[in-house]
Image (cartoon, rainbow, N blue to C red):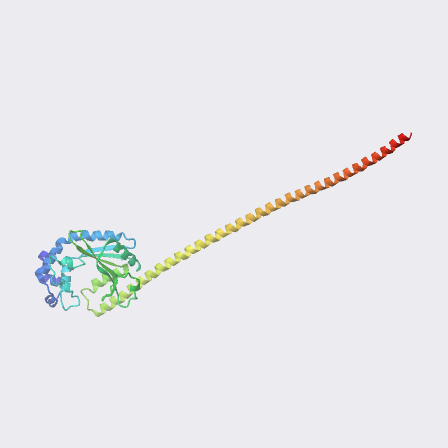
Length: 331
């Protein structure tokens, strides 16, 4: 239904706003409807901005998927009614004086983008990615459930940790952009896929139909705890997979080292065999040389003996010739 044809009674009925709540709100129907009309006219342009944010966020490798939406006009109007009731838990003073000209400077979630991831620790990597793309308008808030383990120690200093009354777990950011010739705020929520499932179910079941039903709230709380456990199990399985991969790599390295060592030992044996063979061949040459030297020494000794004999024989012959010569002289 177009806001132009929406009546006050139809709006209150469709959004389950009681007369008491309506009377407590500090806004008139004419102003509220003017805001709705203005927002309805700008929805298409806001969709372009939302799609731009979604495309950029989807490029982050740690993001599993991205969802986005532009707040519907009646949802915006219903939110303004809740925020302008002074004595309610949802009251915010900045909403007083809101109108069709300034509502987009007051409401920071006209565009909502959800970056979903598989493992809890992916959230910090996504935080770094978002900080590299935009400057936040408000410090990021990490909403946790009351009773969750301490998480602030592992978060950057600029992230504030708050306990969400409904048990929501997610990182919330508000970024500003001027893609539509005026500054537009975009709320980015970063949460796990498990947490997104619980949030969607909780929003459809409890809000706003059964927000005070004790039994439903109790079951949703149990569901919330199961979701938290599922996220913890996901992180644990991821760590197991990392350790298993490290063990496998260590085994491969050890196997490669063993194979290398075996090859080295075999190479050493081959070198030793080659050296032994060379040493054996060298010994043969030495033995041959020694035999040749001994042979040479024997030949030398034999030659010396032969020379000595020859000299003795020559001396004898000279003596004999001398005797013969003396005999001839005597005659």
